[in-house]
Length: 247
Image 1 (cartoon, rainbow, N blue to C red):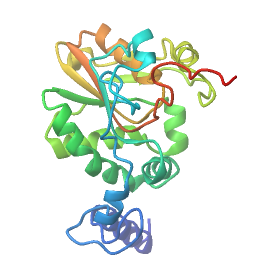
Image 2: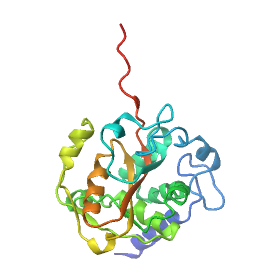
Image 3: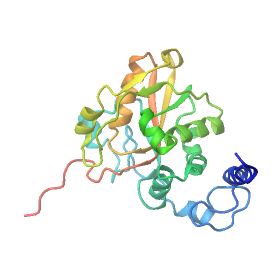
Image 4: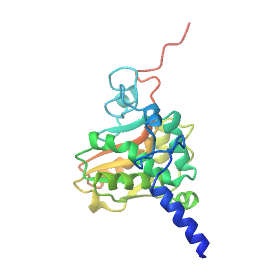
């Protein structure tokens, strides 16, 4: 590696760790925050009515229909934002190459972790297959989880692996996703989770099928309880059943 390349990499690393502009609007920021107050206030915070189990936004107080029919298989799940607007775009940018944004996600999600998961003993994340991680160059959920652990002072561990790639899940419902994911996670560090209160961190909760499958594997390995924190979650548009058909 020549001197010029080393200098460029050092400058990029410094810029990633020391923010000078908002990661959303690119305006100048002060105090090294990742997102300016104007953009932070405009984000779609998930602070209204939520399902007490999956944590997704609902239109009125109560348990959503999906959780009534089939619980997530964990203590609870919570998300900082609904999956829309700039919160959604931050997730997509992180997945598509803007690796440095894991710090932004962690900064914004930290208050939720401290409020809802103070008692959790261990933070882990949803793993990718080696092939998928090599293709992307990193696991965004792993980076997000490790940074949250660092900021909160909680222990962090990679406790599971994904044994096989699964079919694309964008068009699949929850049960189809669960079938697609069945048996794809295995716990590689049973000692780390045994008797512990484990928090799974991921970027987005859509139907909850991925965290459900991983949570089941971690509980079988001896965890006391398992919960989940995601940066965004997809709102349950019809939380208490499908609307009646128009006549």
